[in-house]
Length: 252
Image 1 (tube, rainbow, N blue to C red):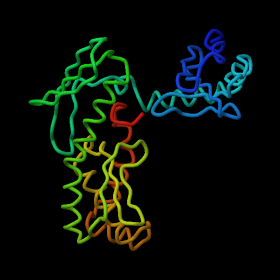
Image 2 (cartoon, one colour; image 1 turned 180 degrees about the vertical axis):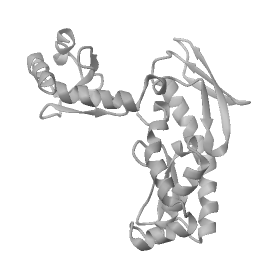
Image 3 (cartoon, rainbow, N blue to C red; image 1 turned 120 degrees about the vertical axis):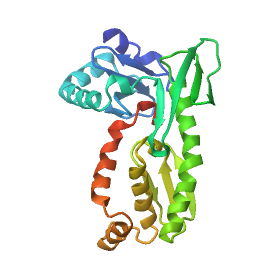
Image 4 (tube, one colour; image 1 turned 60 degrees about the vertical axis):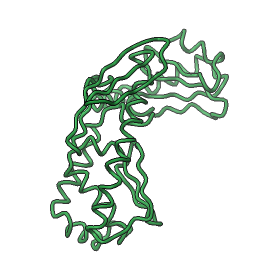
């Protein structure tokens, strides 16, 4: 860890991160930081933000004093994101639309990152198998699929419920499956396509009912129950479904 920490004064704000081998913490030097701040760096790493010019000894002491929290949080993150969820996949299954693709990976250090989708095969050309390029290509592909399938699905459910969203947005998000704004705009997470269709339909109903009741009052839940009687069980399963989402499907 000593060699890593000695680099604190040599890094700029854009490229000031490295991995501390002893602590498992990504340490980032920042000219704007006022104090040392330890937090989760989504999805499964820990980050220590260090004010520019902080001595290595101070950083080492801070990590030591927070050793128990670091160990406990690291264990929780490793349990939530086991190694198989951190790798580029060999196949992608969009359960919501009952579709599956094999993934072929070609590594070429001089290649421009590229993804081709043809005949049930996603062909990735990336400069390194462990870099972020493959993850980002797959995430953008998923975003495109989400816009293609989730938007018309939501429109169809809206017609069935007799409501009209003012605007529909498809994104990739880390903490929300969907949301409804006060202006009647609905945002959906493209990663919904990785879930069973029953959960996606429930989420659509959930957000569309907010067009009538922008709260979680009794009247709201009665409306949800009219359109989805099993909403309690589906809501529980949807809340737990984050552990099924691979890292590549989440924005970095």
